Length: 145
Image (cartoon, rainbow, N blue to C red; front, top):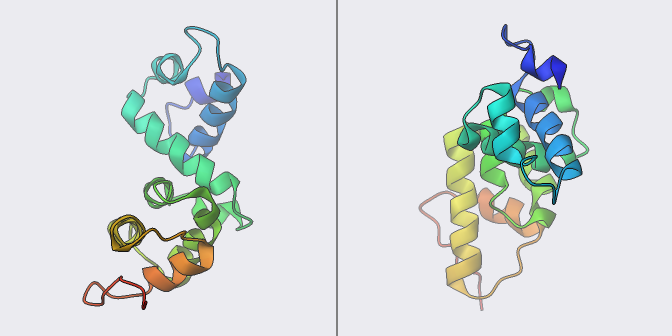
């Protein structure tokens, strides 16, 4: 915790802070006053910002991708967190392969979720996400019947 609280010069990336917060908050689960809000206060960050970092860290923790390639992708990873967890590795790989911006990643995730929720009950796994995510916005997300 000392490393994170003394990080005034910004040596730690948002992903590293998120991974540390994830470990601390999960280990303190069920103990009053030791959750994300307390951690955010201790490190001097807004709870919403820290929540985004933790969401990104949860996604990064499930991937076998080299973490150094994800250091500056916390916003991307946080957007991917909105997908079912079994989609995360495929979505991260697609995001890295295609070089999506954080905005593009969020749009692809939204499109995949719209297809999954509204087109018809569709269990989206990582391969289906990659297929859906590569569609342009002009293409229909409704799977063939």
